[in-house]
Length: 131
Image (cartoon, rainbow, N blue to C red; front, side, top):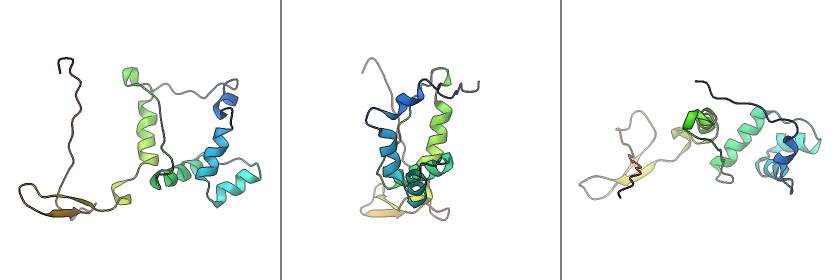
């Protein structure tokens, strides 16, 4: 089933800015020269330019994108997956990871390259009413 995504009704759009003008403040934090120029001249800022700036600000750890949704009936799942791709770092964007060798002393460094041996971080979250 395809997710149900609609645009905001015009009556709600003014409330998305917050009483303190938070949307312009967010644009100010994320702004590069191109966005700042458009913003200062009160021109339309294309969505792809905002996405690029949001990704760069996220990689610099200046902002944290927050999305709402529910796995029940797939409400918000597709936008969440799209946000992971659009905003979070790919393995090529991060530095090498340093870890421990199982059963041996010392540390080992793994880069995000195909030539490196396979390694993974595995975890599982469970909810058990009897624990």
